[in-house]
Amino acid sequence: MVDAARRGFLRGRSRPRAELRPPWALVESAFSERCTRCNDCLKACPEGIIVSGDGGYPTIDFGRGECTFCAECVTACQPQALLRRQGEAPWAYKARINDACLPARGVECRVCGDFCAVRAIVFTPRAGGCALPQIDAQLCTGCGACQAPCPTAAIRIS
Ligand code: SF4
Ligand code: SF4
Ligand code: SF4
Image (tube, rainbow, N blue to C red; front, side, top):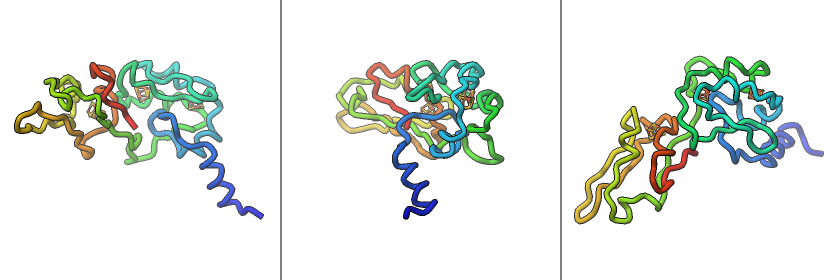
């Protein structure tokens, strides 16, 4: 006999969070139960970054732009699969830089830093090499503004 908590655990594991959800989304198991796939959040987003993902559930495409955290999507979500709670951060996503980063390959580049409004990308000088970008996780909001401008797709938000 599988108890309720165990069933919830298994349900959560059977649908791992592989896609980025809109800001202030409930935890994945609750989100997928409440979301009716109505697409109202897609229509409400002024940045056009919410798209229909796997199974018709909304996901974020940072290739289209950044999240300004305007919360228009939350306001549009009648089933409250997106629910803004007082004092709660919109999400835990952060920018991550991979091996395709140009300075790691000896080519000067600071494009991502130019797009980060909160200056969460710090370029650390290196002796004999180009300064390497590092993400300050305390400052990074996961807004995604740095992802699309990167010439080598070296930044992902997760
Ligand atoms: S908070 Fe605003 S910009 Fe961000 S996904 Fe929602 S509607 Fe779009
Ligand atoms: S508005 Fe809410 S219920 Fe509709 S697709 Fe977006 S998250 Fe799901
Ligand atoms: S995701 Fe936004 S806040 Fe984080 S490093 Fe990129 S531009 Fe800066």
